[in-house]
Image (cartoon, rainbow, N blue to C red; front, side, top):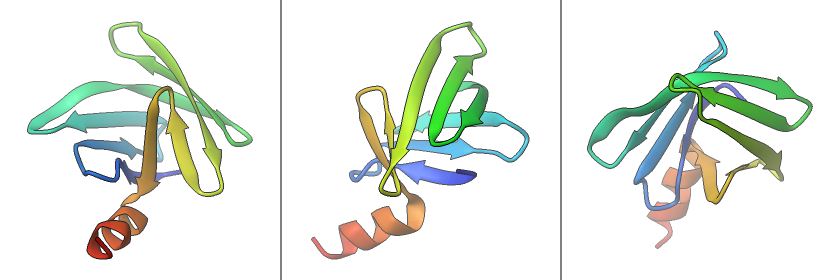
Length: 83
């Protein structure tokens, strides 16, 4: 799960760090959301530094985070190169 996850259009980038923290950028806005996450199997629970909570699941190598679909950065790069 650790690594950079990104939407297909590259607008949202979510870094899941090994220390249990995440940092999410949106467009040009760096660190738009930061907080911690925990993993249970393929399920992620997020707690933003402001107290906001969210969830995510990894299915077939794709991170489904609330309404977002994120790909490992290398997979997203490959997908855009094929367009």
